[in-house]
Length: 330
Ligand code: AHM
Ligand code: MG
Picture 1 (tube, helix red, strand yellow):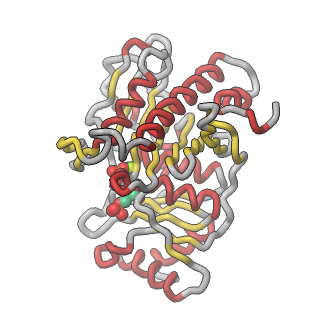
Picture 2 (cartoon, rainbow, N blue to C red; picture 1 turned 60 degrees about the horizontal axis):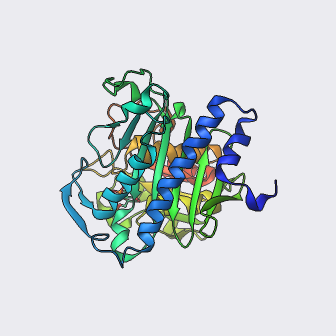
């Protein structure tokens, strides 16, 4: 089939190489994730026109952050897209303290979906890029009443991971452990069509991406890295405030993204299970690296669903330069 009509669901089937029930389930699951992405993209596109699309809900989420109207909409879009599909039994979200249970799906599905429904939501009210991040795990228990401890698995156990980027076009990037592939939403067809496959991250890039406003709160190692890039020719700074957008640039063009811990918050800001781990899975699949500074993101065994973790992710050579600086030898 010609590349210009290779849809996401067809691509997932092709990745499995044989037409098994598992292949069909993953194809259907990616299709429903894509549906949530289309709903969110449509709402974002009209957000200046619709009442209650912008601003805050007045609620504080499990992270202790003000929930935006679009955070709430995006979370509900994922739940609605997955209800009564038989595809996902539990759904963990940045916006919900405890996972949503979809008991009607549990007799058919042994999968759990973990999401950051709207990443970078501080960008929304200024009409800037945001994203959604997802990760698929197989729970160790299959009872609807399981207490969710069985979801605390290292990122290497992910069966699939990806994100949707709501930029000038809407793109979906995913991996099932067979390389990284990107799709662009064709609004006239209402379909995500293959646009780049496979994606390989360059061994090094010129971009470093971190919020330098926290400079005084970082440890000496991270400060060393920032001083190093300021001294060295060939580095340029890019930081959008949306992890998905900053990571996407680095995935394609190389460089390094950092969200380190601070002296007050050594664990940093980003959540392990639905932000750092899925992006780490994609980074490694594309030939890149993701680490806390001391261990690989994908090796961490989570202690809790909403655990935070420092993140250094991107091209192999750039990440090595950060690690050298952390060890005191820039
Ligand atoms: P969010 O998921 O609540 O939007 O928070 C995560 C976001 C990332 O997208 C982004 O890289 C980071 O927070 C920005 O944080 P800061 O404003 O501290 O630089
Ligand atoms: Mg986020």
